[in-house]
Image 1 (spheres, rainbow, N blue to C red):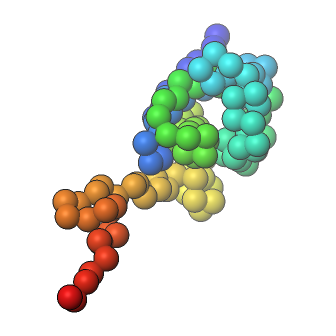
Image 2: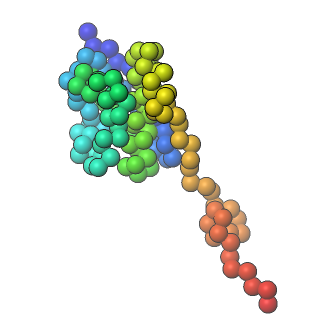
Image 3: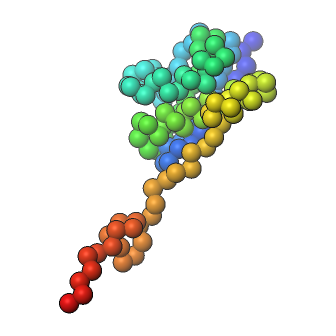
Length: 128
């Protein structure tokens, strides 16, 4: 019988809802598209938490992702995968944490302030 673990990962404006189904064949789909096609060169990023425990070929992963760019989405997926693996087996948590896969990168674009051209860029000052 197949079990499913679900977790959410976020990075900048990107959000990824990750569902890991085990046992599986190793298929990874992002928004109903093959992961290698969808993520292009960022594909190895999402495999790192799975490779830590040799689970790439033993689980199917289904991902819904929105917002941000490919890098933000890839890092959101990586965090979601790591969180889902913790739900799958609590023994994985220590190794995932040591590798830094459970750390949420909270960096976001800073908002624009009034009177400024961008978040911090001020208009040129003229003394006279």
